[in-house]
Image (cartoon, rainbow, N blue to C red; front, top):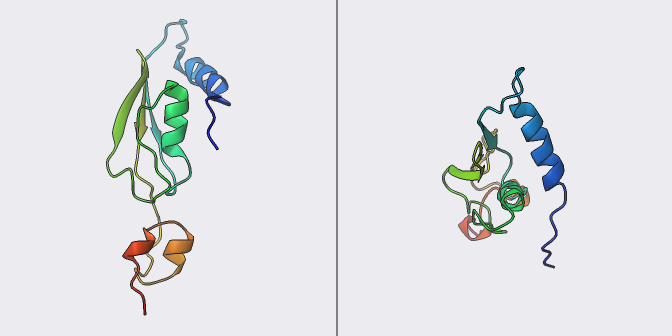
Length: 110
C-alpha cells in the first residue's frame, strides 16, 4: 500500500514552530533528534515532514546505520538515527528476530 498523503506533519510542524518562539517573538533555530527502536518509522516521519524522500527507508532492521541531518526548513533540522536497543541480548536468542533488532539472515540455524 502506498500513499502520498501525509497525516500529522502539519500539526507536528506547528508544535515545533511554537517551541522555536522566544519571549520576544523571534524564531530560534532548532535541531531535533528522532530516536527509537528499530523499524518504528523514524525515517518515514522525517520524509513526511520534508514532503519528499530525504532519507532512505526499509523494512529491514539496520538500514539506517549513521546519524543523518535533514534540513526541513531554514531553521529546523532533524537528526535521523539508527534504531537503538537498550538491553543486552544474546545474539543467538530468537527474541532478537521477534523484536526486529537484527536481520533474519544473521541468525544461525541449529
